[in-house]
Length: 134
Image (cartoon, rainbow, N blue to C red):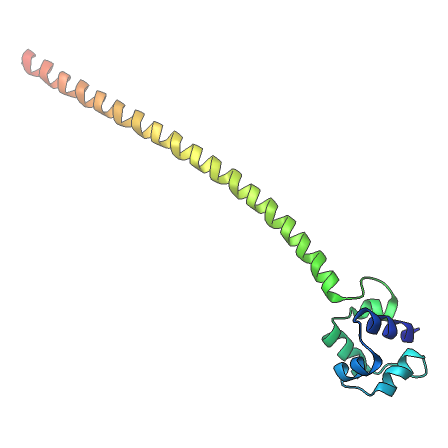
């Protein structure tokens, strides 16, 4: 069972048994024995597969999921990219609303300033009228 997967990994990486054994720092005979199911892969060998070849151990042990961790990472990366795009759209919408509110605030500030000036004019007129009547 594991032998087919070891061979599949090696072939996918386009390595001979010798190149694969050198890469993983195990003997060529160990690779051969694993591939022929004459020997069960050791925990050390499995760790090397996971670390050096980015093998998804869930796939190796159960057959479920993707062979390489990078495939899983790529899926997660694509999901993050989608989330980033959604956040950018939200930010763009909020920035537009913020700019619209700032423009509205400027209009209100202008209107408020205008009304204050009118109030000052009215107060000044009232003072003049009071001074005449005194």
